[in-house]
Image 1 (cartoon, rainbow, N blue to C red):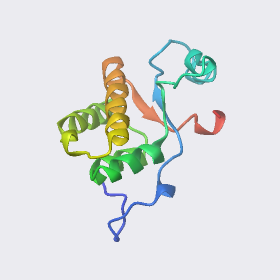
Image 2 (cartoon, one colour; image 1 turned 60 degrees about the horizontal axis):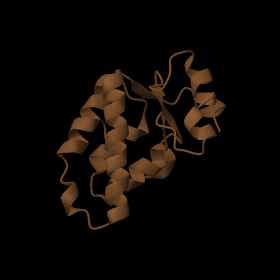
Image 3 (cartoon, rainbow, N blue to C red; image 1 turned 135 degrees about the vertical axis):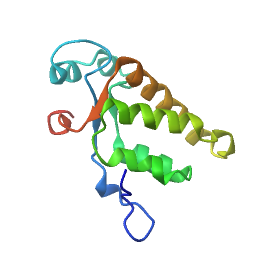
Length: 132
């Protein structure tokens, strides 16, 4: 995977799509855009497990000191890329994270990525413009 940090070694949030979604959605079957638009979790005020705020996630991974993992969120991911990312995140030493909120956020990310792996789903930016 090519580095998205450029020559400076720092990433630019603009390089990340604002939203990546599970492809296919993991919570229900049916046309992907319809499932994503009618998300029951969002309707209840919960977080949708099929939506990933790419720039925010990349920022968290950068803060954790894992820019190579942040790079994954710069482009859509095939199911095998999601599996590789989950494996690398699982292998990262999260015990060294001093920020409890960051550690919790990354643990939640790993749980969500694991759901995608179990479902054989990738991540796409194809529906970003149609979703709020």
